[in-house]
Structure formats: C-alpha cells, structure tokens
Image (cartoon, rainbow, N blue to C red; front, side, top):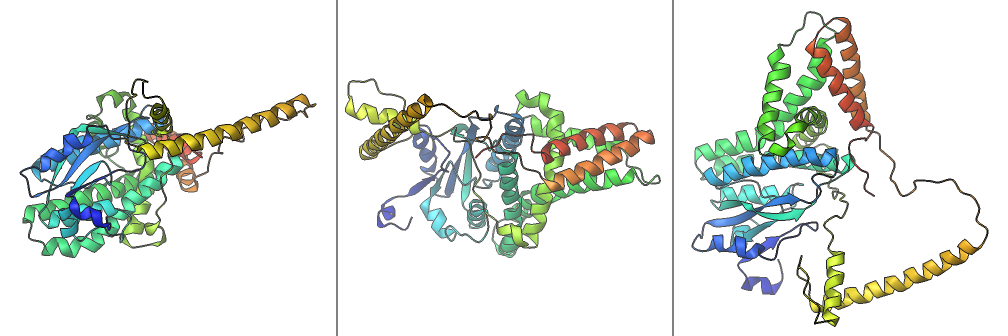
Length: 406
C-alpha cells in the first residue's frame, strides 16, 4: 500500500493465502461502490472446501454459518456495520486512510479497522451470495489457537477503542449496539456464562446437597441457543448435541482468552498462523497453466487465480528441477532395494502424535467425578449431562476430535 502506483487506484481487495476467489469476484463486488460514496467495505462470504472433512470442521461450519447469515447479514442490512473478516473483502482506499490506516496494536487488525471506519461514518455491505473458497483448520490444536486469538483480540480492542466510541458522532443506539452486542455479548458474556455454569457451578453443586439448579438453566436455555445457532445450517441439525457439548468445551479456551485480552496478560498478544492442510493450494492449477503456455492449442483449463506468464515459466522450471531430483532419489532407492534389506518395524513417522491438553483433561476428571456423585444421589438429568460433557472434555483433552496437520 505504500507503493507509488497505489495512488492511481481507488479500491483494494484483500485475501488470506488459503482463499481462492472466482474470476468474477471483482465484477460482483466493485459495482456496489458506484454512486455510493459513503460505502467503505464490501465483504463476501466464505465457503469451505473441507467442511465435511471431520467432526471438528462440521462443528466449525455451524458457528461460521450463523456468523455470516445472522450476525453479518443482519448487521449489514440494519446497521451498515459488521466486523471485517480480514479477507475476501474490497475496501475503498480513502476509507482506510480516513480511519487511520492499518494498525498492529491488537491481534485483530481487521476488526480494529472496521470499528474505526464505523466510528468515522463509513458504511459496509455484506454479500451473502458472493462466496470465496477457503479452508477450515482440521486439527484441534490449530483451532484452539485460532479461537484464542479471535477472543483475546476483541477484548484488547474493546479496552483501546471504548473512549473513541463514546466520543464519536454516531447515534447513541449504534454506540449501544457496538458496546453491548458487538463486544460484550458475543465475546465476554457468552464464554463467561458457558464456562462458569457448565464447567464450574454445575459439577460443584453435585457435592453440595443444598444447592440445586433448575432444569431450565442447564437444559432448556442451552438447547434453545443451540437450535438458533444451527438454523442457518439446517443440514447440520443431526450434530446439535455434539455442537452443544463442544461449545461448552471450547468455553474454557474462550474464557481464558477473554480474561487474558481484557487484562493484557502474557498470552493476549500471541499471534500464531493457523495451520491448514493446504486443500486450497493451487500448485496443480499453476502447473497446468504453465503447460498451456508451451502448448497454445490445448483447451484452456478453468482459472483459479491469476498468474503472470513469467511466473508460470518460473513454476515450470522449478517443477522440472524437482522432477529431476526425484528421479535421482528413485534411482538411489532402486539400488538400495536390490541389496539385502534389514527388517524394520512399520512406523507411523509421518503422522504427528496427538497432543495432551491438561486443562480439558482436568475438567473431564471433575465432570466425570460429579457425574458419578450425581448417579449415586439419583440426580436424574444432571447425571447424563455431566457424563456426556465429561466424555467430550476427555476426547478433546486427548486430541481425538480432529486430524493432525504437520
């Protein structure tokens, strides 16, 4: 953005490395700026290539469908504001400059610029029908770190921008929405409610005979919230029970992130790139395009992302070099195969070992102990909830819910 030629342009499109926009992306987004000088951002929706890969990706898809179709779409229609997702969006460069530019004062720079632009009066549009392919993290370790960043960062930003919110000239009801719903409800109240109620208060009441929680607190409200969250993804309805249990399990990570971000503790500024399996990698597409540059008569393949002819030639040379090296390795392997081989045990060296998450295992022990106490005292529904929640914590603590990504 600091290059001289940027001054000749009015808009900038932003994508993360694992995103694949369609060739018509700009045609579907940029025209919305025409005749609308107050529009600062056009945000497209994410579409996931691996949403059915495992249970973890299915549960993530439920959360993100609610985020796009309810949070962002409704806020875009009624408030002309939502949090920028950091990717798959087109910004008016003037809006970025007017809002103070890109800042690295928190781990959610995308949300930061969106809030500052909103306080300056810029409007946003969310396009639910324009979808960009991307990838979900498939391992619990990667998802856990991503969620820590996504929940500690907003609390950092909340502390920093609260004075600016009250000083801004936007209407009072927009200020109230920004503080109460955008920050506090989703990022503070819900993680606090889930963690304290289901992971602390409920299991402890099993050891205090005088304490009793009404059934609507531990059953009706959580089930109702889960049904509302899953409505935008109706095909995921069979996963409503695993979704409820997993969200309660994730409340440990979210609560810890919320506290560290709010009080600026050590892990609040931790920024680790989320590991992906590379399912949206376009190396094969680039290679096929490189071949096309040498054989013009060949039918054109579908373009996934634009690549210059010089870049294609470089890719072709690189792959030729790799192919030659691979051929040498195969010759060496064939020579070794001819010699008497020493028997070796079959190993799974390529598979990354599962991690152990101590907090989740500690809570699994607490919940299963409380479930046993509940069974002995004939507590009924409390026993089943504590049992299933404890088993969920145990599975997550032993890293059995996702796939390892090296």
